[in-house]
Image (cartoon, rainbow over all chains, first blue to last red; front, side, top):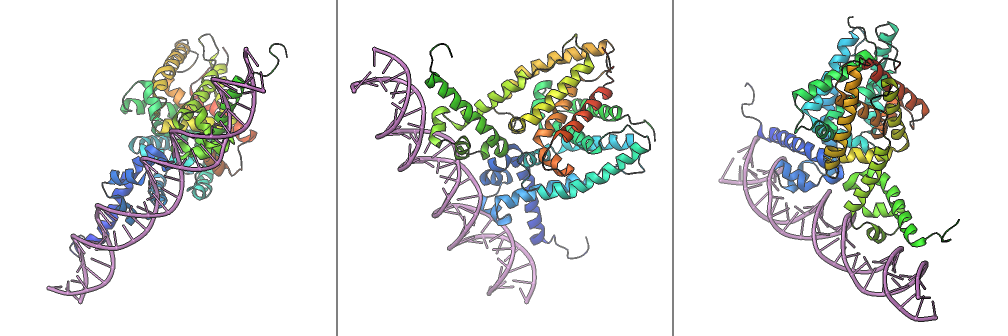
Length: 213
Length: 213
DNA sequence: GGTGACGCTGACCATATGGTCAAGTTTGAT
DNA sequence: ATCAAACTTGACCATATGGTCAGCGTCACC
């Protein structure tokens, strides 16, 4: 409330418009893929003239990158609780639930990611081989520590991550398939609860995680 | 060697060319998606002039459908051994290994599928809600039978399928990510063995499947 | 060896798409 | 009020793309 008084319209407007474009672009890229998403469609989704998009994001690729970065922030900020002094059961449980919540609340983001990876990750190669690899390496060490302490059975930590990512993200990426098989119009509490429960069960019992720390 | 002698060039040529186009198209669709795959690229992959593709497959969509159908055949023919009188441990193990083998041998096929589903399955809607739903319903009944017999813990069979599909197909669909995290150039015996072992472990122990029938 | 159907292809076309631009409008500081 | 910078946008452009077509080559059959 203090300070310059007005809402600094200039800079704020810019940021708001950029955010609006990014938020509108996410579902378009998710449903059409990079190549399939047209600037016209992206503009329509943001309720802006096409030329205006180019004013804020010079090229389609720049806009796509921005969407990807935007998602990555949320993705990585949803950090897990896989830390050395934690309780394995709680940690895995929390991680799985967090991932499932993300699949439920931002399915488009997950789809944009899936698309990018499917294509060979042309824009995210460096992130995959850099930040992600480091993160997984670090967390894998934690899990190996738990194993050494006899808190769980010996498993390949990295492959365990692949399994958890796959099982949780499939509820966002392949929702059409899941809805078709379950014969429901949309995935609701019921479905996500059942899915989460099963995944937790597979991971906790599958890895022989001892219930209490 | 017996019979008409020659290789019935006309009809055989037609089928061979169609197969060649389909086989060549699979990786193109897998890596570029439907929208991203251009007829020029598809033609180049098949080493044929573009107009020739249109001679065999009238439109791009027709060609795409054919690729999808071709894959579906292989996919469904790789039927599992989840039958009432079977042994749960063997059945799941066999199913997981079969799926992993498919991910290894025909990753492009899996990617084309993933793409299609991600897009909302515009071409496969009927299959998902028809053949696939029926198949899963049938196999789910088998699993529920095993549960009733006390051969394994009570789990939601349908969600178990989602989990198995996700875990196994991720080795094809998200190979770039897996390769990046594992820091390897390609996924070989080593990686597939580790992945298969982990998935089997998660499913068998996670579902409390009794070792012997 | 003639012939008609099938197979093949370069050249062409209409459209869609990413991107540009010049001209107009709004905004904030002086 | 003035002005420059930031924002907005309709019209336009070069290119890429899916698809067409007329004409040529080839093969099986008589």
